[in-house]
Length: 498
Image 1: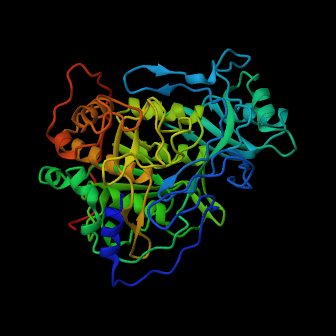
Image 2 (image 1 turned 60 degrees about the vertical axis):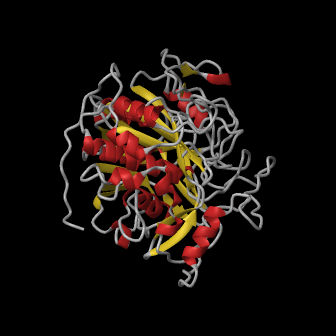
Image 3 (image 1 turned 120 degrees about the vertical axis):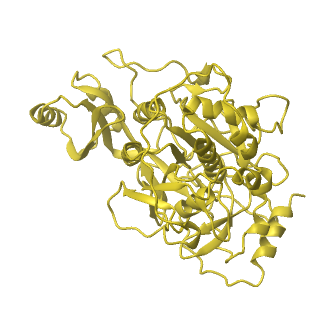
């Protein structure tokens, strides 16, 4: 039985003040037994879906702690899936659709529901005049909600509402026939799903942090701490006042522009990267660019294509060397173009594989060719039961029953691939502190070359190259012949001694 981490966490929590229970942000559609067992989700009907925002029923509605993810709908996603042996696998989903202009189509696959039901996202060249945009809007009977120029892609992206009962697919298909439109697609949704269990209280932390030894972080910290490396965290609101994060948040950006309190998911992810109090993050002196793109509600927390792209563009403009994306959901053409541009600028992109389990199709952005996909392990180096698998997995890190920081100075025990992703983002910051000239491809190669093989011999769909080894990565050398890419000009940020 794998109960060691749970007992360690309970021991650390004994005698400490309990925190008040937080609101449950997602439907509880799994059963939790008396021990460490995580039940499986029901497969049929609408019990696992979110009602609202175009996200209804179907799919695997697994609600697990510590992951921002969209519930997979076993639909025909059309984009390529990165395979970390250097090839591209289009999988069983067929050839990409083409629009009337010969470009890849942004029409959503049949059955895809992870989108806002009355919105479309368009990319239009910056050279288009306001008169041209206005005529396009009137011609297709759409209402403008928001627009923004994106430096990464060199286009202006518009978010428009469909004021009548036309489907998103029909409107996208019609827009693609207009030569003014560079691309059109749904405003996809990515969903933050929180653990339904209450917080467990405050903790000294160190006895429960088994991941430190697993990743050989103490040895790595003797050589690097991520000092002044900028790591963007695209997530829900972060409690920058938490003692674990004192002085860590260099800048903040709100892609939503609506009032919100700090959220436990964003706070825990930030802490996994940069905690330096009772807990120890993977890169305790890294500087965080806090990007709020997910909005907690009573039914969950959702981030859209438009909000995430805004956050990614802002992070790139403000010197991020690493971007952590602890969310998952559908393949997204517009987001792919932004990720590709960020990768070319020398930004290392890291994402959670997802918590939908062994039978889930690849989830994005982890399955994007430009992203390091991270799966989760437990305290015994086994695969975390809910972790996604696949040939796109690059590397693994602990993600089962970890001590995390939550708002208002609290602590909790949580699980999920989002925590594993944050650990890898922190390790990347250590590597870049030692060698800031490394390209994203060199960083990926270094992580994989120094990983501990814990599954079948060689790369495998569960662990990728294996369990990350922070110390070996910090002292390692990049493989010869790995393609270089342009490096961004990184502004050194200091928030004082801590």
